[in-house]
Length: 361
Ligand SMILES: Cc1ncc(COP(=O)(O)O)c(C=O)c1O
Image 1: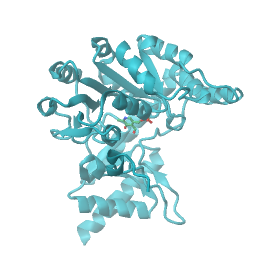
Image 2: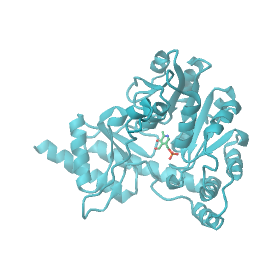
Image 3: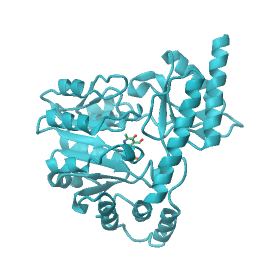
Image 4: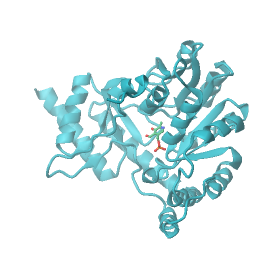
């Protein structure tokens, strides 16, 4: 037997969504926070055109894409790094700043990959309690210890869907030591943009990274393209750990065209918010208490972990897959990604049927 490193042997594999539909049922996946519609037609055309150059390596510096992103967001193209999904960037950030003996910190119900990326380095993953499913800045600051090197915060959060205002984010950053890297993950930022001031200016402090992705509002989860704005010194080090040629030609072309088509992306966000609020409203009317969300999903708490498992099993038996949340410390919750209206109606009806049967039993 060839022994792996001890911290790798101890790790659990990352839990991906279970998507095996029962025989004869159409799979309705509301489990991976994918967009309710595809990418801009311009992105599809750009991807097809790029396929013709498929025998050539991609631009290792993502030049055209970075220039477009810089223009759209009024930021400096030189501070942008791109990854094969933001997962790629999160992993490289962790590897650049964490190791055995050090620690990363995040809110208790944070996106589980923050913990995975931390453990991959041998570092410890610490959590700070949340208040009403909102990250709590005071609790995070109190949980900082001498080993802490990174604080991860997704805003809005996944799976909670809640968000902190800019003032709280600034209070958190200001309260952290200067040698702690703050990673602000805005994977769902586009859905909340119309309510919030952009946060990219924080990068100029030199101690904060802001991450975004094309997987959600741009509908390009399959293209695997994440990006981030980094202070120069941090970018230089993270860059050393990224695989060269990490983003395919087709994905770079698709993302650039998608970023140029802000109208399509905004319309996706509007459609998502309409469906999300209709779905949550219907569930509330049926006695559920979905958490108000700033994202493309809704978190649904149940009376107990057993009730959540029972509802999940019933929906799965009908081909509808929500995402259980034990991995994020919320075993009594299911998370529903917002899909097309017909699928959301089916999901809501099944939840109502489940609740009625349970009340009757
Ligand atoms: C908070 C958060 N960060 C990052 C990611 C990963 O996104 P990507 O597809 O860009 O790797 C997700 C995906 O669900 C997410 O919810």
